Length: 155
Image (cartoon, rainbow, N blue to C red):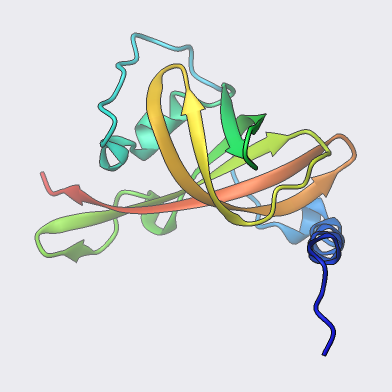
């Protein structure tokens, strides 16, 4: 049995990503980015503090995403979309409600980053690791999606 080379796998992923069109992605509401106010730097271990509201405040800003040993790419946060029930009205689990939302990032047409966990950096928040997947290829950009599900304190 022949083993596939990594380049073959990347080409297959690239063909898969190119198969998407704008119509094949579920429609979302595109929001205008709010004007940044006094955003607070979050502690390094505060992924749980990154809510739909806080990511919405970062809409239109750029994140530095690390891939490969010494490479990084900048992606723009293009969309923040609430999950089912508006993102915050999810089920109560163990006294906490579930919040879900998705983040759509837009990046350059190359390189195509395969789905996996990447280190994200932003000037206004601490570095965080997010799992994301390529979801669409456009003429001048590749779109990526990260879906976040978190337990939020009931209040």
